[in-house]
Image (cartoon, rainbow, N blue to C red; front, side):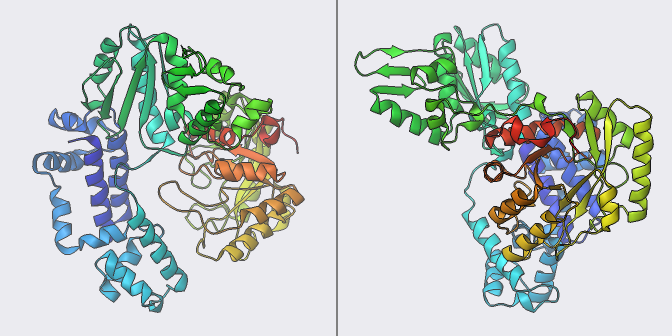
Length: 567
């Protein structure tokens, strides 16, 4: 049994417990354990059979018993008992974004709904809006959610970049360490740093390809593999991730890497233009129709140069104008991780973070930053651990004292202030004015109309003490869709007022996304790259913020925190 199958069974058990009204901490324990197991490189089945599965974080004796029962019988006994009284259709209904187990239980208990089909009938008959606390907007969201569930294609779930990148990097290292490998790189959507990726594409150069493919097929993270050949091998990891390894002789490595880095749209446009010039481009080389000869190149730079283009960074290869820019020499010099000079969105133990001022400042200093804004959640954040106005005044004094101790970094007093449903902020203006940095974000009441949400955000943008808008669309990748909002109008307002927008680097968010960030920059809005770090180590999320900025064509000049502290 693969790690992905074990994790899926635990995730299902967590949903069943939620629908049964179990304690949230019990549910969270299974969700976290499923995540740990899904990301584990070794076979969890083998660990369980060897009595070592409790070595994994968060996996205790109780969970060990459930995993062993699942391996032996194909089912977790607790899940089987819950399924006897919880209709299976409710598990499917629970997948609708924003619905939640409490609402699903109400729909079942008050309307007798047990399947997605019955839910659709009730929504179309306008029965759901009759339930207290629900309304027409909820019905609309349910119908949209059902449409998305039905349209979801079969096959493996697309994984977030942070979930799949470590797998790709580990296998690439293994290829490079083998004596038969001359070069190896990650390709595909992972190399382009997309939000989500379907599988792993690896390319390598070798004069002994069969030895290399045979060796990688035996890597400890691999659960299944095809027949190794001189051209490559297909693999499946214990966590259920598909891996495609392609091998070529060293002289053709540039052709292979360019081809399998994609995107499909970029390559299709590149091939069309090449054909018009009498050339045929593929992973096998560039064939000149006039001479019949095929040229091979060891690097991508040579491939693009032969076709008449400047080198195009992988993040730009989406057929969004990059070929024209590469032809006329107008490609941007993309922002890099080393350009970032400060972090302007993080949380401490004062709200829902796990690090103190001292610990977060040390983490920022260790990354070479010159400044760090502490932006704990404001009074109406809505999820507990909020900071009252009185306590924030005290925090300003604490930060002043900390800076006086010469910590080697400047700490800024800030806040992530909630934008209230009608557009107001939940601290008085004199307190906001006393802060060095104010981020305004929407954390509650997502189900308003696009007009209401847009007016709500513009109200915050126009507030004289707001410096930046945080995670502007509220999306959670693979979990929650963006709320309805007219970002074009919001960007127009921000360009007028000088209010920045952040690219939130939390890999679950990456919000603004690349398309929105490019739109904002083209509208004249300054961008801030942030991590929303809640622990010192999650300041590493700056990698994902930079990746999104690069996909948005952003230069260092378009990013505020690539410069010294400016206020």
